[in-house]
Length: 360
Image 1 (cartoon, rainbow, N blue to C red):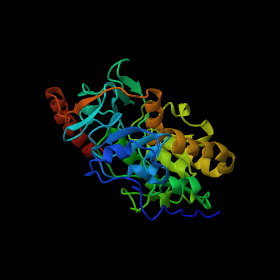
Image 2 (image 1 turned 60 degrees about the vertical axis):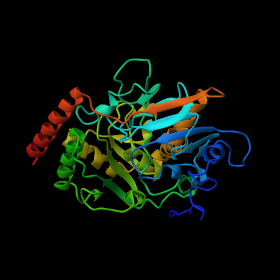
Image 3 (image 1 turned 135 degrees about the vertical axis):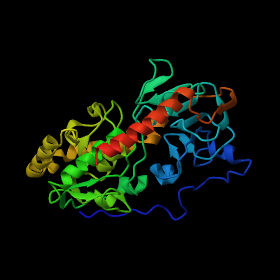
Image 4 (image 1 turned 90 degrees about the horizontal axis):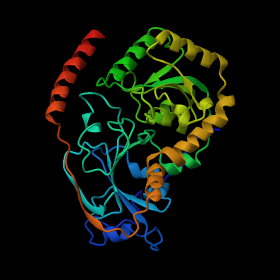
């Protein structure tokens, strides 16, 4: 069956919101969609604009399981969640003690993402794939990075399975900041010299497409290679495959089976390119997409209803309902590198340039 687009409602994704300038804004956010009983209000602070996070909630309204999420700088909330601890200016709001959290969404890289390892004093809890300390405030977590296919939650839950009349694709980026980026580009170069007839290549590194869906939806399989191989670190690279019912041929998270059925993906190691290409060719030859479909469909359900940002945060917040606890002024300072990390940053830049030159 061909995929059909299910349009969002014409009044957009901010239906029912008061203006952030309104003095009643915070009060309105604390009421459910029917104006009834109070709901838990979670403020999300982040330093990036795309993609639109609220599109990942039903109707784009920012509500999940009785928890309302806002991206607005409200003066008070029940929980504050900062994505990635790299804010360029301070974040301030009133909320209960113990309800100021960080969620790390990048892989840790010495000299590059040092904010994952320092500057956490203002947070009562840090959900992260990299644990700079044992116990206490640090809790293992997947990153819950937003999907990159240009579809809303409503689009995705109501669309039909695409026709799947093509074999394998790879939508690959052009970043060169991390060793994992360079390894991925090296694997791309290897495939371009040996397998261009077997894999359709897209992305900024090859052939730009406006919507990642267009490089996934028609394909039964797609290569998905993470920036780093680290427990609990998996991203939109594999989630986008699941959302389009495309089996990921995957390099990355070593404990992915903790999250998804084993039959929903195929593992490769791009650090061993010849063996990876053998696996790719075997996958295309055996072509067991239909056998894998139940596991693939279950993985898709888990992304949409369990692991994406809003069900993930709603579950964590509801496990510790703030209730009527007193709200106090909380300030998250802008991230500033320590003297030690400034030195690491300088060394990282030297190493990055060396890696670029050595891979030419």
